[in-house]
Length: 386
Image 1: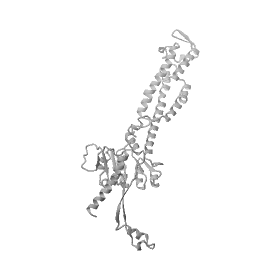
Image 2: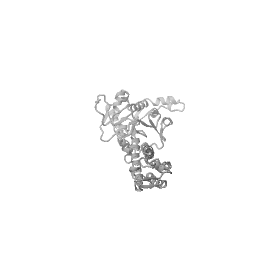
Image 3: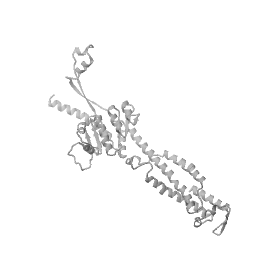
Image 4: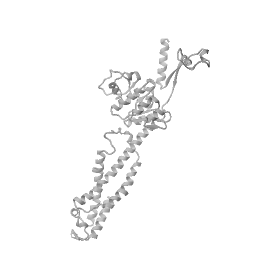
């Protein structure tokens, strides 16, 4: 092998790798007739085929990304989801494919690992790390690498894939791993969400995974993220709506006990609120469409952003609930005032107001039990509607 031949060889596979092609070297050997006969044992023939080969050339094989993957990667980035490529391909091929699908942005400066890189400055741009470099890295160096916004790991081994997953988890990240081969199974098992391919995936990978993509399409993962966020949002809306109605249901009883006001919400109306006005609207939130910024929000913090949080409770009780209660009380009090019972006279009106044997004089007007019941009934309907 001359220097000129070796230079041409490197130029050829570099050029094909830069086009995103998987480069395969082809070679041959002419066997003597004794090895080609039927009587020759197979191990002997195979052993002879692996030595003294004649190089024929390089083949570039294209495995283009599926349609829609670039859009899905862009959507992940806008949602604050970091997409990292971990592949067994050569770093030239991996880097070009990462550019095609948007994992590496066109304007990014692509760096390779160097221990002399500044420790204090925040990483920027993209970085490509091959297997040999990764094997020589300490855990501290790997943590520096995974802080880069755009990352490609090339020529990785199964153990290195597992190590990368554990490095991200050590930062507190929620990690989802996709894979289809036996070599991917350790990383799929260790990840928070292992995603295996249903068509091309091996049985071992499917058993190790939590989710199986029946169409082998990365875009399906993004659709799943959208659906998960939509379901979470709709559940929060439904819970907030249900909790908020507790305040206007509770306040009339507190006013009845503490302020001795007439009861504006009898028990039958409470049941009517729970079954009639709360049930169907609460269920309808499950069919709400996604908000326009659903995939523009950063991922939730699993330790802080729970389904029922302090923020949701305060919003339901102290904002929505109080507003509903004030509106309902306003409707009831206005009806009572229109019928001749001023708001100043409501406090302390019980228990004589509901006593059948008492005839009351309120603001110079005589009120029988039936008159009081009729006015209170109108106020109760007003409170219910309000």
